[in-house]
Amino acid sequence: MKQIKELLDRSTLDWPEALRLQRQLLEDKRLLLERAIRAIRDAEKSLRPGERPDAALLKKIIEVIEMENNTDWTRKYYGHEAREKIEESKQRWSPKLQERVTNEWTDLFRDVEAAIARGDDPTSKPAQALGARWEKLVEGFTGGNPEVGAGLGRLWADRQNWPDHAQQQMAPFSNKAVWDYIHKVTACKEGREKRK
Image 1 (spheres, rainbow, N blue to C red):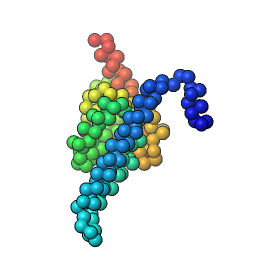
Image 2: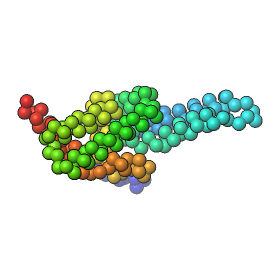
Image 3: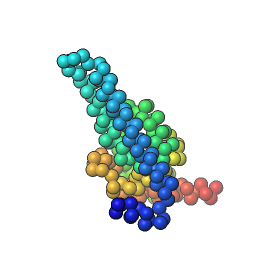
Image 4: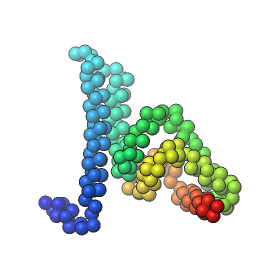
């Protein structure tokens, strides 16, 4: 009852939006649970009594369950349309592509750190080339979709609240100086485009 009273006392709360977001989170969770249940049901159907499941079958079940545990926390940053686009892109995402993209980001962070160490001006051609590489990698994830881009921005702005496993995974990309520099590079580019 205390929680309900606290909610009712919040006069500034946008109730329709809050309820819509909560419903979407629960619907997304239901979809992930249904996917896990389907994987387990398929495993049950493929086994004869007394037979042990093979490694591939167990791996599939574990992957589905881990996907539910590892990605569910990011859903709150994206609207329904953005989540649909992300799900579509997951179908094309492979371990090989993940490795390539991770290497590209690692190289880019290294190059930005070197530009900072040299004292490259954010308006310089080399700095702007780094900004273009950054935009291209971001677009590789967003597909140019503004809803996905906005959700990605919200996700990164809230990184101090990420779960531990996500913070550890992204630690190589957490150098604040790199982020600040890229923001300056982007601001310089946007300023030039407005003057045109």
